[in-house]
Image (tube, rainbow, N blue to C red):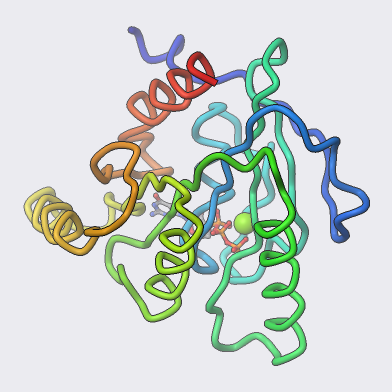
Amino acid sequence: MNRKSSYLNIEFLSACTEARLYPEDFGHEVAICGRSNSGKSSIINALANSKKLAKTSNTPGRTQSINFFSVNSDTNYKLVDLPGYGYAKASKKMQKDWGRQITSYMNSRDSLRAIILIMDIRHPFQKTDMDFLAWCQKYNLPVQLLLNKADKISRNKGLNALSASKKKLTNLVLLNDPLLFSAKTHDGVEQLASYILSWVESA
Ligand SMILES: Nc1nc2c(ncn2[C@@H]2O[C@H](COP(=O)(O)OP(=O)(O)OP(=O)(O)O)[C@@H](O)[C@H]2O)c(=O)[nH]1
Ligand SMILES: [Mg+2]
């Protein structure tokens, strides 16, 4: 597969702050979750080879709505960019609003099939991540873990973090082994895109 053909055809559908505005609940959805600033929106852009499909920012808390994207327009498959959790500096009210939005989406969405969980490779498995993983386990939601921002550390450190992460992920339904990823250099994009396509094909 050459680099260009590995990008996905992703289109923005809607940005919703309330459940009544979500697109119709049918087909298959994969939600992109993780701490604020871990790179969730950047990963959607990397998958589409775009700079502005999903809004990104240096300031944590950029994504404040639940954003739906279609994958290859002839499928009933969607990617969902969620607000990040665990941003300590956000006001209590903001944290509560985000928490409420995320749980309301997760609890109500029949088409939710799997989670792509993003962690900053330099700060993986924080308390909020562990709480979130426990939640995925409780609801039996399959997880694909991405260790993002791999460009920020050496290859060796990255590989060590990758093997340490495998040991942490016991008792979960895993879609595949964790992936080293960089939304900046597009390392891992081809692999993730092929995973997503295989989920689309088997949906
Ligand atoms: N070096 C590097 N920077 C990255 C990478 N991925 C994201 N970033 C940067 O990290 C910051 C946060 O990225 P976002 O994609 O907005 O993160 P997010 O998880 O969507 O954040 P929230 O919407 O606030 O939850 C931005 O400044 C991105 O440019 C990466 O792989 N490498
Ligand atoms: Mg975001």
